Amino acid sequence: MMHISDTAIPPKDLTMLQTVLDAWCTQHRILRRDATAEAKILISEYKRGKRSQIELIDALISGATH
Image (tube, rainbow, N blue to C red; front, side, top):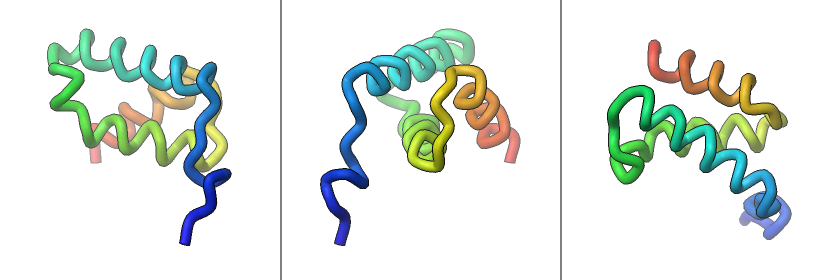
């Protein structure tokens, strides 16, 4: 069972994650609603402790190439 602390992302960080996802979608010409795999990668990496846009973009690049 997951606790709220496992799933809650502070608004500031949520905004940052959305910014990274929006930039990725724009760059790769995909609609945000079609970027569910990318969103899952971002949330997963965020929960593993990656908190900078650079780290998260690198994770997306790695995820996209595997």
